[in-house]
Length: 438
Image (tube, one colour):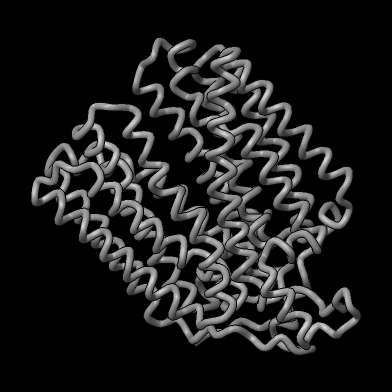
């Protein structure tokens, strides 16, 4: 039974991973506090829902444009250096938010510019951060490491907004931004004891092959010469397309998010079904986080499983069905249960996909492929929320949820039917890649 609870082996296996995880957990909590503070400040400055909507745009544009740049940097430079520089930039952006709030800034453009600066630093550092777990942990613990990171994210989503409300009610904006600045500093300190993480050699037998065997290139050259360098230059999209497991894993994620993302429909569902009570709207978001945390606490069965491809497919299909159930739910409790199931399924899908992507990608391409994962993770939900809003305006929020959820599950089923390598994928044997414990 103990194998079904949260797998804590990564925290014991690597001190560097432990520091990284703790720093990221604190940094994520600060980010959630700042998110609420920015939303409140933009509203106070403009009283316009259009301007509050531009907050997402201010974050998404640098994430989408610089994410692939961050992937390239992670494949040609020491990843520890990239992560440290990006974290330092986020500290500076957070201090800028503190300064503008303390100075009584009245320009929404200054505020959004600082938000974009923080997002840009995140975009440049995130691909490198995503590649670290396979370098610090053995293959059979990579999924557990990702589960711990996702659990910290879910806890931050649950606790951060509530903490922000308390801070803002008692001390106002400068203190809330100060919490983020302090948390970003802790995240930077979590990188101090990381070992150097330069790109690994790409030759046959190198540690870069721990997650995927060497294969010949299209022109017949062995996978250690000039052809792999040309292939690396082509970017992560080429690698994703060449490997059916990666292609299917990303297609599964796109289907789930683009076709069934529900957040933009929460206010409409709340208005139609639950009289627009703002407390109910908050419960919708909390229910998703509670489901994610619950799945994280009992994630041992997931992280120790070897059939991560099949698990991702099953979780993504469950996500769609649960959101369709949310669209049909007539009682609040049933709606919250459906959202909690969706949150749990999302956690399983994110953890299994993340482990599969890192283990199936050779190290010399992990930065670029991780940048693709980052772009898909950012763009998919945004497109899905837009799609849901458009469909709801033409029909209704419940119809948009039911149609989107069932369409997502059907699309995932199609991927499972057409992509046997993903369906049959198994986690690599742990022996070839011992943990690096500084």
